[in-house]
Every structure is written in structure tokens, then in C-alpha cells.
Length: 567
Image 1 (spheres, rainbow, N blue to C red):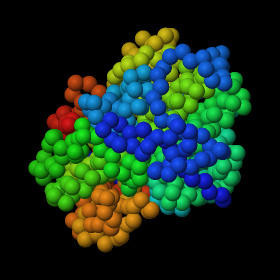
Image 2 (cartoon, helix red, strand yellow; image 1 turned 90 degrees about the vertical axis):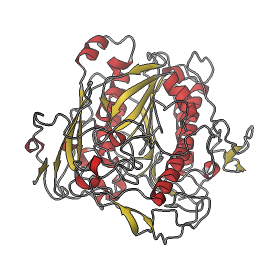
Image 3 (cartoon, rainbow, N blue to C red; image 1 turned 30 degrees about the vertical axis):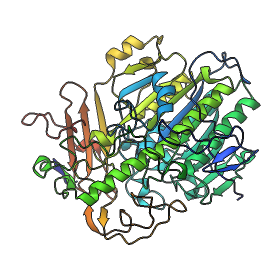
Image 4 (tube, rainbow, N blue to C red; image 1 turned 90 degrees about the horizontal axis):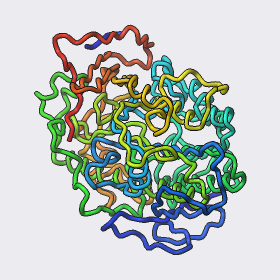
């Protein structure tokens, strides 16, 4: 239905590659950055070795009687349906250490969805626990369209992080991507609730820049910090996260901490760290999943789908090759995320606080690579874009547990506050639309049975058109020079080349049109029905009254829009 209505420091990382991938050589004590050894006394090395859950008596802290620490890892564009996250598709994964630490030793949610499949709304929803229509505004917010309809004044000073600090006394830090529109766009500092702030809107993998506050003693003066081509964003984010955790635990072992760790990976332009640029395990798939009817789908099979899905051209060999290269580079970016998660976990072990720490790991949305003939992107209602992973490990969680109830990113905020033991919120937060999943997660929770029996059986999606974003794969004229700069090419081994999508203007594949505004419900039962209603307007300038978009009973067509066929 279509309704008309500062000083510099070098990034460094100790690398540990998966089997059959030759890493840079490990050094016993110097910090490793790429293939160069450097010593940095002001920061800590990422010793990326896997640990295990259990009793730990070593370290500087004994937090058994205190509130738990919480670490929240959030990636960008990390797919679940294409095999890039969890549950893994077989044994292949770019994140083996994370699999061991958080999946094997924690809980895996097999039906985790985001409410909105694009970054800025999704991240705003995660921070506030609110649905899109409760955060939306008419017209552009801030200096660009990349606010994507969100009124960030409802987000900046009103996140669950503020409650952790004000209601429970947590030390709080944000490291990595925040929102597309930053407080600094309005000459504002870190939002209410943050002690430490090394944040950007995603920025660049290579030579990243960050807004900074409260991390001067870690080598990043208040205001901003600009890296050079020697600096890799994921390594910067990981190292500062580790250093800050050690600092706060050492300064006050009784004070709980919350760390929000948000690498850019695996977002476009999919730049692996130079030390992982050629890494590929022989057991890993050579392409993204193609053994399903949605990959390079025929015109007939998508003729009744909305927006430009029905009219997208068939994928050519050039497009298919580029997609495969992108698939591989995405996994390579996630290898560095695996190092960060392992390093943070290992640091908590060494400090003696791991048994009193919850680790949560998810993504802001999924991704498409060739499905319904989109070269790449998200923004759609299909499972590739809306279904993500959620891993949680920590005290009271049965190792290896599988939780099948449908959960959403709006559930993250209330869950974290419950894990923190907050029973009354006095901080300036709006009411949550989501619900805590702690009763589903903790083995001895008093409301476990009641919550499981009454839990939702349907998830709700909401999205509003952002911009035309065609991906073209021929007549590419822009020259790139990876690894000294970002590259919008799939083949990074020879630069410049024409196996790209940046600077190209022939053989184009649309990402979305103004018809791509939708509300939808996904029934999580044996039918798997996905019912969608679409509005055909540019809703940047048109207000939305959600009640006017009626979700009608299905009578003639029980599956008026199908969810995707699984690979």
C-alpha cells in the first residue's frame, strides 16, 4: 500500500590472526602497530589473547560486593544473515575470539532486530530506548541530512548512560562512533552522563578524528584530536577503551564502570587495518551467500516489491566481483573488532573484575550484498537489514545459552539499567518503549517464567527515506591510495584501479527512492509473516502521524510482502 501523505599519538594494536592467516610478528613487550614496533608509556598494549569465564583472584580489584561493570560493544552495518556475526554460519567467522568469550561463555539471542535499519535513528533508539516516531522531527536537524529525521535534542542529554552516572554512580566513557550529528556541531561538549568522551560520527578508518573530553591523561587533550595516516580508527578506539578501564579501576576499585565501545567497522568504505589487508582463511567462504533466490533476483520474483526493488537491474559480472571483494573486506575490518573485544575482556581479567562485568555486543543494523539486486547498503525492511546479533556474557548468565524470544535495540537501555541494579530513574530520561531482557537472560531472575510467557511475539519496524544513494560500478575515475587514504574500491591490492564504486557513473544500482518510507510488523511464528505499509513521499519535509498509517488485517494476501529467504 502506498499512502500519499591537538597533539598526536600513534595507534597501535597487538594482532592475533585466525588459523591459517599469518599475522605480523608478536613482540613480548613492545606495542605493535602494523609492522612497526613502538613504545607508548601513556597507553596500554592490546594484548589480544582470549580468556575464559571463571574465578579470578589476581588483579587490583575485588568487586564482588559492588554493582557490576558493563561494557557495551556496538558495531556498524554488521550483518547476521550473511554470516558475519552470530550465530555463526558453521565454523567460519572473522571473530573467533569473540565467539569463544561472549557466545560460548554467554548467551546468544537468535532473534534480535533493530527498529530502524539505518545508523543514526537506530543508535538514537538504542541510547534512549525509544521508537523512531518518538524521536522524529519534521525537517532537517543540524548541518546535514545525516540526522535522518531524528531530533537529537531528545537524545543528547537523555540517554541511559546519564542514568548510570546520576542514579548509580558509574564512571562512564564513550569510545568511537556516537551519532551522525554530534554535539560539537552545535559547539557543545560531551552529553550529560559521560565522564570520558572520544567520539565521532563514524569518521574515517584511516587518519580518524575525534571529539575529546575527559581523556587528557590518556594522551588526548580536551577539544579534538586528529590522527594521521599511521592511525587506524579501530585501534585508537580499542586502546583508549582499555586504557580508560584500567585507569578507573585502578583509581577506585569499588566504583563500577560503563564503557561504550563503538568501532566504525564494518561500515563503508570497508577499510581493513593494513596488517589484515590480505588476510583470508582458506576455510572462509569466497563470496557472500548466493545460494538463495533473492541474490541477483529475477524481475518476476520482485515485481510486487515496493520502491526501486522491483526495477533494479540484474547484477553484472563486474558488480558481482565488487560485491565479493566488499564481503571480504568487511570481514577483514571485523578482525580488528575481534582484537578489541578480546583486549577489553583480557584487561578486565587482569584487573580482577571480569567476574563482575557484563559484556554486551550488537550492531546498529544489518546489511545487504546483492540481495534484491542492491550492490550494498541497508535501509530496507528485509531481515538482512533488520536482523542483527546480540551476545551477552556476565554473572548469572548460563554459558552457551540460546534465547529465541524476539528482542529489539530499544530493549538495550532498560536491560542495561536493570543489570546495573537501578530501580528508580531520577535522571532526565523519557519513558522507554523497550523492555528489559534481563528476566530472559539471568538464570535466577524472579520474573523469568512470567516474562517468558508474556514476551512479545511481533517486532515493529519504522523507516523514512533519507536520500538517493545509487551505487555505480563502471567508468570509475577517482584515484585512491590505500593504505595511506580511504579507498572506495573492492580490490585494495593495486591502487588506483577501476574495481570500485566511488567516482563511478555507469552501471548504477539504486539504494532507495522516496517510496522507501515504511512501517511494518514481523510476526515471529511459524508463518514468519512480514506485513509492510509504504508511504510515497519525501518525509524530510512532511510530518508523520503514525496513527494515520493503518496496519490492516490481512485477508486476501496473507504474505503481502515476504521476509527474505534464508541463505
